[in-house]
Image (cartoon, rainbow, N blue to C red; front, top):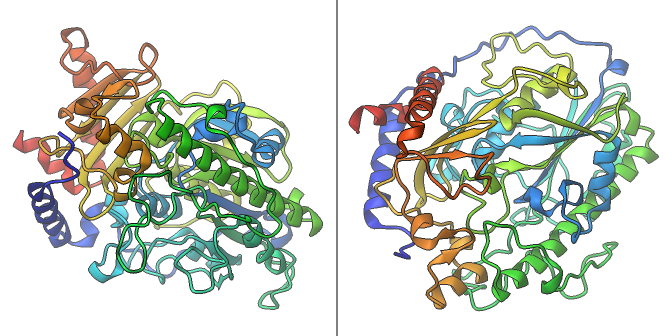
Length: 510
């Protein structure tokens, strides 16, 4: 019952992956654009700077402005108080590389080629023909730079003009897991002292932290660092980091979300997780401080979000609500409303079209599957933003478990394409103190689900989110909901057809 993954799962995943690669890249709904798109440019001084802050595994249940009174995130909360907080924002795949590829292309992972975690050796990367946000903004006259976690490929597809010191934990120039230090290395770029471009040019800064991801579970020698017998430290260390104030939490202080089992092990890890989130928050504050010092804060669009949900079983790598419903804060250059809560349903598919819209860029025939939400950020009582689609294929190479989702305001349909397999867990989640404690004590209860139900899922899961926000009672076999099930199945299949999803063929085999 507690099998992490099976040989049959790997074999099936490899076979389907090979079949997918045999399809020409143009068959994924991605036309091969020419290099001569026409861009509509505004005068340089009228276009905003753009800062996209991407946290790593920051669930919305660990943000003060989203209702957690135990955690301290004053800088993120202040950003929300200065701008708009989206209450219905979703990633489309709850895995690092695929989610970031969606953010930076406006294409589902099955359309841009980044099916799972980036792995250049086996070309686990986006198609060479994909045109990404930084490339399009550079062509439109923006200075572009990135710092921190990248985790997408190939580099030429996601090219930034500058890679600032202080990158991810695997970057030779890394200064470790300190978003405050990361912000310091952005100082010159923000103040336009790089000397590469004219001072009149707007900039695009991609600020991607490693926090609050779990610490590496395996060392350079391949041996486990965290064996599940103690809490993961989430990048925290004795003595802390330079210029970072310590925010320690006691296990009794944390709020255990409904999808987790309230155990000593879980609380111990949540306390460490909170500390990492508070360190991330200080980095956001320092970055905002530098923007203000440079006189750029009021001319800068800032978006704060996370790639996927928290790094705990039941959230990250799943398309249950904790894995895909995430924080999203938008601070406009000159907001008309402050502290506004926007109820529109948006997804990370919409981020690239939105940022191009703010930059005054018409991308010509460059394909996008999302749409700009620029016009509705501060708008009330909007219509037409009432559903999102999600497409998850795999996380690690051994984690083949494709899912497709239609999420409406009331109902949610999850299509588990490989439902015959046990759900395979990410290595860091499987080895977590939280999960290993469940295995050691032989519990069959995990949050509001049984362990059996979590690991062995049916082909379809249908939930009434109004009556069952924690997604416990599957209505897919309930006769009362067959009309709803059929309607949503038809919409989901049509979505797969329209986006040229290679996995759409599975409908014909069952």
